[in-house]
Image 1 (cartoon, helix red, strand yellow):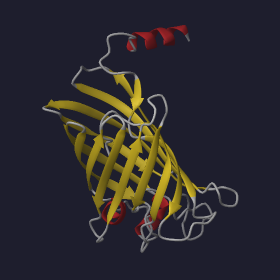
Image 2 (spheres, helix red, strand yellow; image 1 turned 90 degrees about the vertical axis):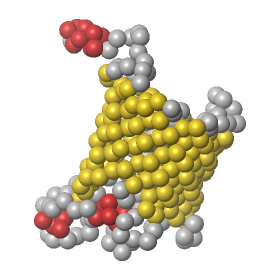
Image 3 (cartoon, helix red, strand yellow; image 1 turned 45 degrees about the horizontal axis):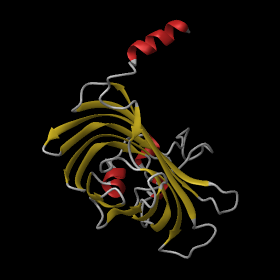
Image 4 (cartoon, one colour; image 1 turned 30 degrees about the vertical axis):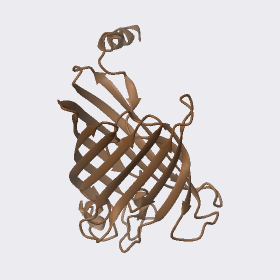
Length: 269
């Protein structure tokens, strides 16, 4: 045990680092939600929260950094009978981030995203089979351009996925449907933050449907030592992966809550 601690201390020096050990990756927030496309009831109201951190195990300089990150997005039917969780999205990954100069930033890495529901046995006969099991693995590149209090973000990803519908997945064949019909390949974003008021909008066109996943948010810092007041509008399939079903209609929602700690720069959607 002592030997392990000595090795850890040698690998993790306590001074002279360009980046902190642990910091925020995506936004961390807690919200109460209501649907805009159907009546508000105990079963349609929900709680949504996101936790996201990144760890810098290696310090490679002031302009470039390597980190591993974990994000979890949860939609909770907290007001329904038995208060079930509707869905979770687990998003671990590792990334390289670089300062390209002239307020340009690049992030490249690998990310896994799934809702943690298992695939077992024969889906035609096994009671352990879950038709809402979703999984994605992809490479991701994000370009961020900052000017003043604003950021312009272009994010692209590509990889393979599994778990949509009940056709090829019966043979355990990977598909592209999560990208083509539900999640999209490219996201465009704009962010503004002056330290007190923040706003952003992200749009992801869906390749094989005439819609786009849209997230628009605003936050207000009314006291420097307290979380921000937060409002979020969302339309699309990229919130709860269990909404990604053949022939499904994208949900439309409005949420209010607290933004606990936003990143210093625009989020890497």
